[in-house]
View (cartoon, rainbow over the protein chains, first blue to last red):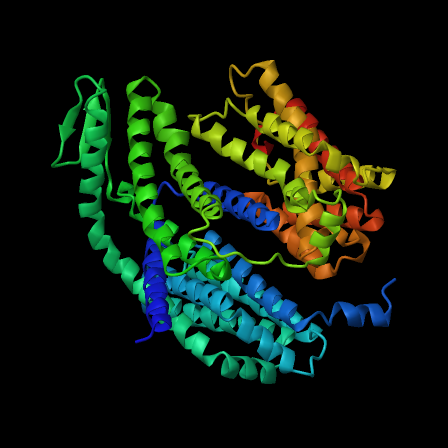
Length: 54
Length: 546
């Protein structure tokens, strides 16, 4: 298998793990909708600012 | 008056925008359904029980699949859409059909989730509810894009579609299996927290069998959910998506090291979070420990890890490729505004427009983390917003801050609408022991800093950014209606249960902004509304409005 194939499999594998974690993070009682929304908005905004800086 | 050509233009947006709008519309409708109806209420009939058992999992699977298609199939979808020549205007009858079917589906859902149906009829109602819901989605899909285009899209993106469905399925199944890791992960986290606290806390009682820690009458249990696996999952999902989006900027495979580094960092952050939580309770602030800190600290840790990984990796040349800058019109304009030889200090317009709003969000997370039931540190929010406004004061001076009576009148109208849409409630007592300075800070924020920050973010940035990447060169008066509607819906979403009033208010402020292109006018309208709400709260005692 070439390097590109290994990279794809590694990437997909990591994505599975991430999805699994994120999917069941929703059931955590301490993650309420409003604080989650604020946090993800703040993170998205900061990333937009970082991306725009380049 | 809307002319025939104007209406035709409104109903014929770009194909990619139609797809985006359709996806967003269905996502918002699904989110509202899932918030309004609880699967635990489905107790009678075969089909309702099936929905109760598998509904949430199916929803997550569907959302994951759509997110993956959008993430990995963007280019394929764009290419497939660009080859289509014939795009009739959005079909008004089908949009109406969608709304009607959605309404019917909602009425049926009220019956299905309402405990009032006998088991024999519950299945029929549930079947009709699902069928009308699916037909509503199909109707919306056909309203925005013709059937032939959908078939072409499915055919052109078949590989991405199969991959997305397989990945979403695998992720959902893996999520179920991952529960088996909760207990061992909690044990490891418990050991680390115990080791961290033991040298500092006198008389610390450690019970490994129940994973509990206790001292001076305060005790905590490391529950399965506190194992740190959720944070690890979030970091992996975020890290994978970030590396994918920025893949041209990183050197692979070495950039993949960011993922294990992020995992270790978030796990350590979780250990530190639990240790600080215990110390807070031990030191005599159990309300803060188990209240605001418990719900906010995890998110603060996640944001810190994500930002440190992203910003840190951008400075490490071993991880990053040297890429030539993109020649975007906006960036060219930004660079042109600074003297030659000083291009590195070109204005970051995204930061200029978003900084006050982001400062308020960050301050609100910190102040809530330091609060038990009442947010005593609320004044941090206006202070943070003011700091951002002062930092970028030179850029703000160049903006259009003209105000008009129209803006003020719109603010009064939105206030009336806001109160009219508020469900009736008995006036509550003022929070006891609140100093006048706190109320003054609350009013100041509501009438000054929040309107400026939110108008800069939602109208100045988001509304125009939805029209064009180089948003700073867009004249608001030429903004498209989809950008106006979408930015207003997002604005409404930030108002939680008051999403309808928030969305309508967003539309009104957008109308004010687009009328003359003055951000000052929109901020004035918003400020008038908030100031009137503040007066209403203080004079009538309707504290729930705050």
